[in-house]
Image 1 (cartoon, rainbow, N blue to C red):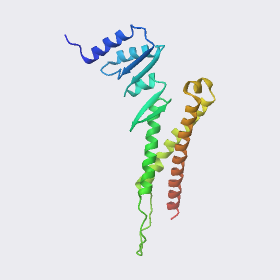
Image 2: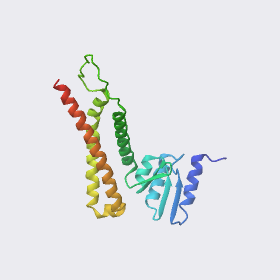
Image 3: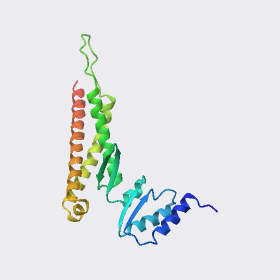
Image 4: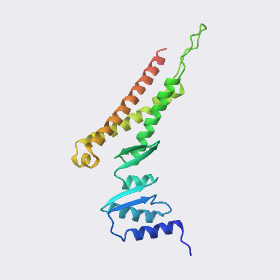
Amino acid sequence: GLLSGGEKNRVALALLFTRKVDCLILDEPTNDLDIQTINILEEKLLNFPGALIFVSHDRYFIDKIANKLLIFKGNGVVEESFQEYSEYLLIEKNINELYEIEKEIKTQKPKEENTKTEKKQTKLSYKDQRDLERLPEVIEELEAKIEEINACLYDPTCYEKKGLANVADELKKVEEEYEKVSERYLEVLEMEEALSLK
């Protein structure tokens, strides 16, 4: 009978690991595989002594196997990272949210002067209130990440594996994000305090 997609993949992988090779190139290796087969594949790849290059959208598989990421951002842009993929996605999410906040602030039209008595603002806008509640958690995550990267800089086995320049670049990127998020949080705190005094 004809083999299913998963069965074909299992046969191909079984044949692959019977050969002695120095480099493996895999395209979506976990597609159509059951959990048991994925676990076996992960074990084989972790013990593989050669170079491994693979394309995957499986976050858990990437976290477990990859020690270097090449993220294709589009328009010919490729970003290199030595973080776990989950950590990379979290930082990217925070950065994108920060950009959206900055964009909203820049596009807000200045209030036109009005000779009529305007109603005084008595509470934070929805966006400001959301940032007030959300940003402490973001700041805490970034502080933990900065602490983790600094620890790597003091550990030769860590920074030699990732590359000292890459670790330093990663630290700079996270610290810049931390500074922007902290400034925004202080801004909404001051707004809340000012409103409470009215």
